[in-house]
Length: 285
Length: 315
Image 1 (cartoon, rainbow over the protein chains, first blue to last red):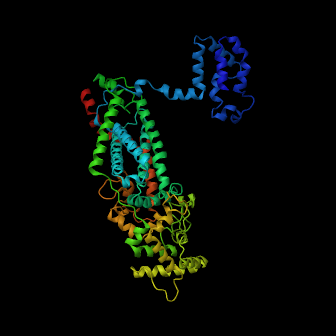
Image 2 (cartoon, chains in turn green, purple):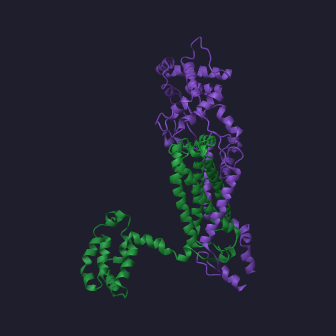
Image 3 (tube, chains in turn cyan, purple):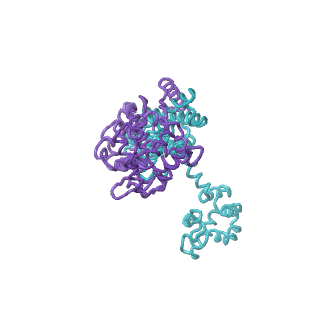
């Protein structure tokens, strides 16, 4: 409905036509005098407050003047439509909050600040590389089923790759985490980067734990029976039963990798967007 | 010196406009995947991975028969860990508290388990032996006090003897309990109990709650196997792996709290440790906005080592 309104408005460039259609805009935008309750406004249904649009219409007779000003500008109707769409359409808002925040060279850089020259930086990408190996070996195990690796020598080897990948993954991740701590890498509005990194660490621990309890061997039997007490004490065990192997398998191969993958992608995007934190004496605090 | 002064005014939140160096993101990622991949493949080829065979009711009844019959009698008597656990399995225990809060009770009984019925009576119902059926009928028809008296008497007698798999009952004070225990023992030795415990809900089992809880109630068999693999709680428990392989070493802090007081001897150790780890995790998450902790990197200048090339060039 809103989209139709915008198209109609910007498809026409002459002021006269826009002025004639003003009552239609009022219909779509609502009238403050009709109700003071924000819940009565139709846009609140979609999670958009009336205030979001008020700067387009303003009160009383300011709105026609605003339209007039817009119509008098030198921008083409297409440009004006794009601007308006970006501000009020959901797609436009998502685009401006994501894609338009990035320069191509931020996402895929071919140069870095000169201070990005230390072995500590290797551990971030090494963590990602270990995650790639984990996913690859995990997919192989998933395709063959949970019992395959007990009976097949190839399966046992793939399981070994999965085990050593997770060991490497955590070693790299912990070194990366410590490195970022000593670099005070949260400086310069990088708190979200730090937080997503920590969330990735926690999600990795839970994912790793579910991996250990779905081995379907003695180790998984013991770990699941011991760990249940901690989860039960917290009330979590009523919903995540460590002794239910089927539930743990599904969590380990579907839900948790999705969560972990999403957090890692978010973390990497933040790193690319904010850039690598400068040395302490350079960037101050 | 002038450059140093200018650099010190750089806002770390703003895009870097100082000197740069060449970099190739895709090349770095590809090289990292190849190197780490080769490392993982090599470690897997050299050291393999552990795979200790899972324990079963059959292996338990064959390798530790006395422990099996003692545990079965204790399940009927309601004296095992599972029988007195509380939520989420039953209401026979209080669970663990942190202060006045009992989160397990708030979550409720969502995985109902009555060990006497779930582990002993229900599996035995699948047996066609008339003696066993008569014993089940007598057990189910008796009042709770009689059930408790029979089972407790028999359980105590088995524990006292230590090695007996069955005991004579000339005075009838054990009721049908010896018959039930012996029938379950026989069923376990054939492997039938493993199937009966896992297929009560579905014929294609994925849920091993019942056999694992039953096994967890074992007095010696299960814990002795774990101790031999250095997996017991006082051996840093769940962070270890069987054999000499590395386990979940990242759980070291979680395991550490169980090694020291007041957690070590507390009846609420699990909820205390989980709560403490939750607080510490939140501390790590919000470290940048906490007092004191974010200042540590400034006081202990490890960053001078990390960025030593940069500092050397500047100076």
